[in-house]
Image 1 (cartoon, one colour):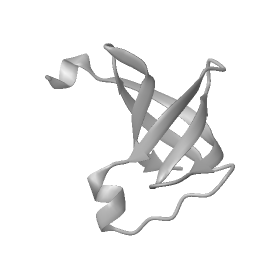
Image 2: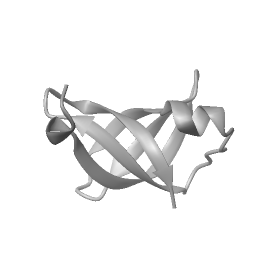
Image 3: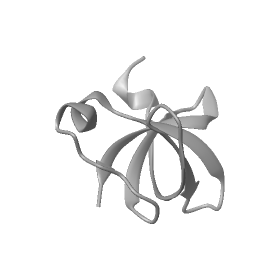
Image 4: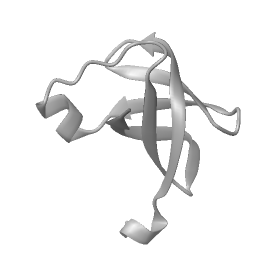
Length: 71
């Protein structure tokens, strides 16, 4: 997958799920399931409910994403 296919959106963590996955509400109001990126895992950045995050999604599955940044 090329970088041009990635969609970046902002959202807020709504719920913590097992295995470091999260329910995130996007700015558009859509709820998706997101997991942590490798760099966030390596740096042990903690996420909690209410955190604003940046999400990367593919155009092929708009119900899943990867958390790449916490604001």
